[in-house]
Figure 1 (spheres, protein in one colour):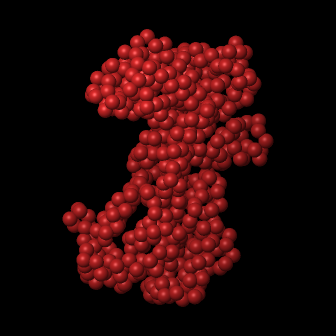
Figure 2 (cartoon, rainbow, N blue to C red):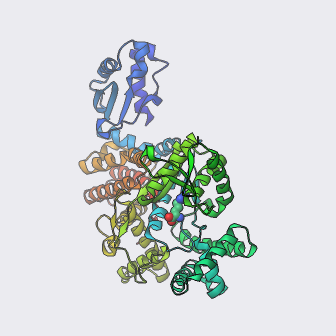
Figure 3 (cartoon, rainbow, N blue to C red):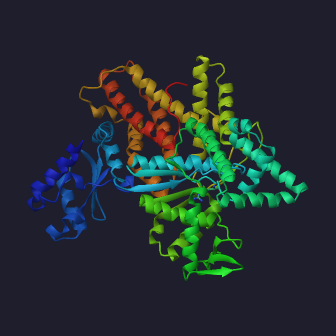
Length: 562
Ligand code: ARG
């Protein structure tokens, strides 16, 4: 398809030999606004040779394309020569550049040689899991996939909440009431139960608070028993959540909890103490941020202990030293936005200018979610619930039981994920099982169903796909609309990336699905005249490629039967 661009360049070179060395097919850009055209030639490149303003150059070059059948229109828009292809040329362009992989390779170059660190999911051991962790997992994982798709080297870190006074409580509770068997069989829930039990017993016996403090003090000071219990709590928890992560296609390069940065937190405390930007307030070490409209960043408590923000200061520096990142993202609830802005500003004041590469990616809450098991939300409960509800819906389908289970799990996972990613991330989500799992409307199952349809048509058609394609057979209105939507792929992926908004891709998938279903209502393939069938199959092969990649980027399981 580069032929079209080559032919444009050849025409220009012939008419303006002086441009021979600077006019090339690689000069074309994708217009930011798709309405402006399919491709554009920036004329400022020619300004120094032609000694004219880009806009008059564009006007002049435009004349070369009067009556050219490849184009529906050629326009000068602010010094860019914008080309809108004729339907036939357009179909050829879109389908060929997808099926040859050119579009994907092009996108893959964006992040080449760059490193991004992403901190997401980041559960707390021994504290109630909450729905924010589900969203952080889903949104963070999709952002990872977007960057990965664009060729970035991505380092995924699960910054487990595994440090703090609550570990004193947990160690005490485990030593007093706990046992290994329960711990190993369901660590996340069991530690949570012990933690809850500690709090209710503490109400009756306030001395328990001192006991917990003692144990945390021991832990901080390297006491062997405390350390080894803490390590076991952590190992078991990681093992436990990994099973759920695996099930939903999530993984990490590092599980590096807050405890990992404990030594480094001591170093940063010393550094902050020595810095003129800090002061002591009521015995605590702080960095004033009043000039920036924020409360102070607390670095050390009056009892000498580090806190959440201390460990984030240390973690950021450590990650920068180790990965020399070009970008770092933290994916948490919007409620933590202030915390991150304080940490970023504190680091900037301490002279770490690279912190401008860090960004907090906040999101709203999910309202109204609950499972049959109760109100505390464990990740696996949500997916279990989704699966069992899908199985209810599918009970009459003629599919073998084990296969049905597997499919139901994937539909349930896709439904929950799509629900989460379908709206702009800062918005709150009203959760409603019935709507989330519906096979119609704007849902995950609807997308999976559309994908299954596309794949099945391609498989059933069985037409050869290696003869010359007559793209003029793809110019009816419905087909044109579908191809137009497909042509936005690069633009949509880039927008999702720039805005850190997977919802852009979710919306795009819905557009693709709707346009595909409309297209297929009026365009038959099986039993169709071979040239038309052939052209349509090529179109569907290109569509399948985009559709699958978008599903994968959102982490909605790709299935070929449902
Ligand atoms: N564990 C924290 C929580 O559940 C989230 C950690 C986010 N990452 C960070 N570097 N602070 O609230």
